[in-house]
Image: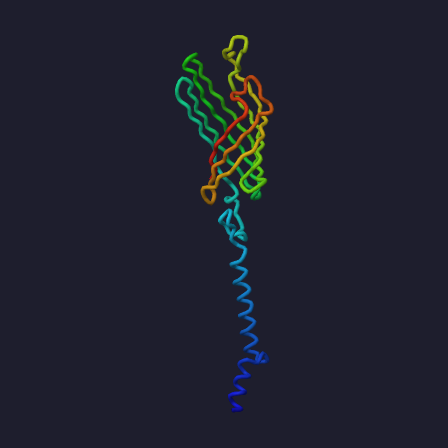
Length: 200
């Protein structure tokens, strides 16, 4: 009886160095495993919260495409490349090309240029957008209603709101409504400006 009692005390008595060591190892392993599986999963981005992003994860590409055919034909390309320094901010630059032709008046035009933009996400997938563009266009002579034969640069300062529809881990559709605060007679579009683009 004395032997059994002494053996049981050896198993459950915390004065045993072996038991202390095993208990401490088990305790720390439990904490480490708990921390490794808790608060790492973000249900909105489908990424680990503690995952450190490399530079390539912060770079994105995208743009928009516009097509219209008929009496008035329009082809528009707006590729862009951007950088995401933090989750709620996207900045970048874009190119702009538009070809239009009016088959009634037999007038065609090429518009090209570039822009810089920033998108700030203020509530989940809703964002504010600011954009500055500089477009090269055919100057219109409003006394005759035709192009003057000269090309000029037309600046544009735009601002508005938009919504991001996530379709994958890195890809999304963006719908944006903008207003050009520096609209002129030679600006090749009218207010408001609706844009649908795709980023990945």
